Length: 144
Image (cartoon, rainbow, N blue to C red; front, side, top):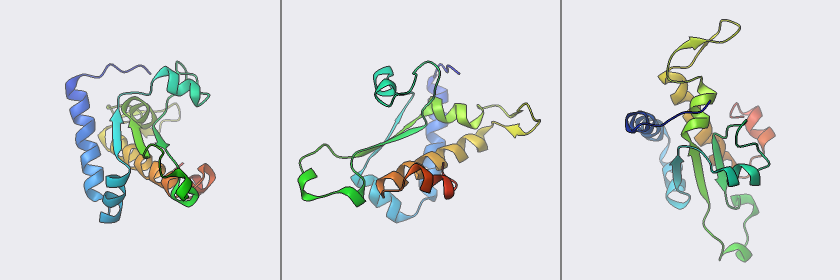
């Protein structure tokens, strides 16, 4: 789904990000001071290709860049700091959009609460990578 982002849509999304962050424990806020959270509309085509993803057919909700805390050593001290990125388009698509609808099976999807839930899952997923959790670990914890 290709989304054009108006200023109002960005503000709406970013308010939800702020709401999710306000609910997280102080220890997570401390982590985000070391590993900043960056909110972008969507990843660049080059980034998608570097992840072996098709920028025209696939979405990306988030990305942890850097070395997980479990893998760090003094040899990495001069490298760029790690970051956590979340992408508005991927999250909105994963949530089902701003409007509440139903999927093919008649299950409700979309709406602001679904977007907020997807933001929370994405942020916690990427923070999990910071702590060295694999995709399988995150899936078992419900953040896949």
